Length: 286
Ligand SMILES: [Zn+2]
Image (tube, rainbow, N blue to C red; front, side, top):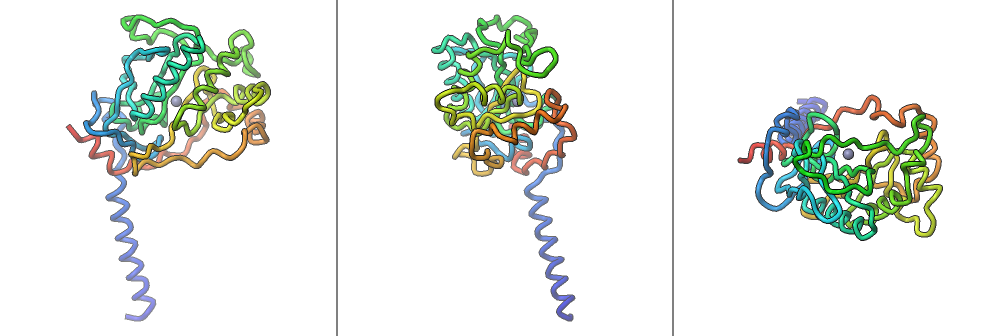
């Protein structure tokens, strides 16, 4: 065997080896419906796996359907499950909002009992670290029997021409709510519509450090999306690229106002990475 053959056969072997590791780590895509059909979580302590747009969770906890200062909406979706840290953060946000007289928060989707891809509504929310909170404020607790709290709309905070905020709906209470959320323990980032971010950039006085985690994103004009960083108990959880240093009130924000997609879902999203193999075991557990 000459050197070139030796090298290429060694390369071939290492490629085969790398490929088999890859196969062991990544399972073929499991249909979203497999994940939405599972009623309950696995036992044991909470463990977020993978990324928020390609992951799952073991030992998820359910957010009680109502508590001090909050209520879960769309109960019929069974998406009120998440990592214990997320459940704790939402409860704390409810308590703090109630102390500030913001009324009862309407909490939208967290994730499915074992996380994983959702058949509709979101690309992320897969690893038990995401939650949507509606911008409806000053609401009262609704009867759970009230069509499972699913017959209520979340009004957009944008004006009818979608060129700025609706001044009759957006209030300083929304600013207070976002500041409370941004300062919760473990929060990695919060997505809001670019017009909302712009409003904060232009209006917040005093401490502005919290503006950093408020990120402009498509849609998000009727709710904000809060994401926690990977918890210490979850070694195979992967956090996104860190949020850039600074308030984010610069040209990176201006970019949004030169694009007509500010109130639409992200056009041409990249395909989601494959689910970690660990998720197959989590889905299969009794
Ligand atoms: Zn969301």
